[in-house]
Length: 499
Image (tube, rainbow, N blue to C red; front, side, top):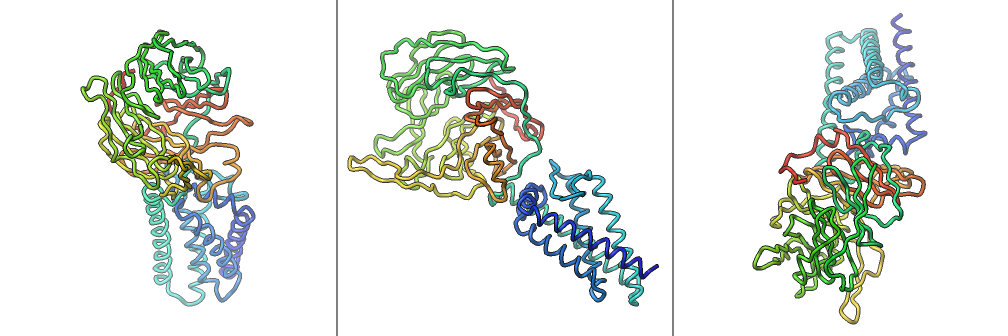
């Protein structure tokens, strides 16, 4: 019985490891992608994917050889304990449960898989004891070695878990972790009459959309996407040569503006009449409404011709104050500092995300910098090429590498649509979807990512986060997604929004 028990267990373990390794090898790219989503091993998925295959094949071969069988059984015990503690940590300490198994084992539930692994741990231990006694080793020595192997295996997995969590959240090497269904697409779709709409704002009961082609249109839609109302804005002076008209809503007002003139009109929601509240106070190319009389601007310095931040306060004697120290020049101070302005209405924070490098800046309403934080890609320097023309103007002479496409901020989180594919990601998914990464704005921490999938050839063009929901413009339709607790648990409390 001793002789055949050890051989039988060895053959079972060898077949298990060969089967597991072969199934991973035959679909290696998918195995790496799945391993990269592990909440325990994400940061080390590249090297671990190769090590697992090598170790499983090596142990399987050693189990078949009489002279190396005892060492191989210890190796089997180490592997099975590692897999078991891995599943235990997944079930008890993970925000989501991934899968990196192959073949028939993929059909097992995680608890069943845990039981399966425990059984093979016990079989490995029993075979070690039987074979050790046969070879003349004392039982205490065998139990001591088995305990040491078990403890070492548990320790390695726990250290990998702790190390991977730190790397992924704090020092990410561009490995994305895709959360488990963080947003759920609902059957809430609003068909629009053209593809030129953009999100202009929201409140408790409505979302608001502007239109690039018909800039005087303000489309008001209830949050259920069931009812809509179109307002045709009539400003008190339309005799300007408008070139870049935009709309923005901060209840109870809407703001109709063009920074090339420059002029800002304000109207009450539901009223078609908009009155001039600012004229020729400051030229600007981006604007964020802070309240009814204060605006955060991105403007261009007349002295340096570089982009700079500014505060426009209509109630102040000196209406405009520049903050040239915020945007960090790398080349020309224009193209290299280009980016997107956002306002976190709950925390009252301004957030500026660079387009061509992996950084965003968090500021209060007085432009005091709170944090300079990084996105997970590795593009620290803008990858752009600039040519200076004879008349002094600068122009990009090659398509730049755009890092961050567009953003939305809410309750201490920044939702960033990235244009770069990370390590060990599926190329097929990138063809069929846009990726959104989530970051905390109070400290350097990456929360996770998710896909917004295309609908046939209809792709996400714009999005806005309102707390419980994410609204997406997918060509000429608005889609509502429900945001789940896996994201909302990271929301920070702030001042109550005046909605």
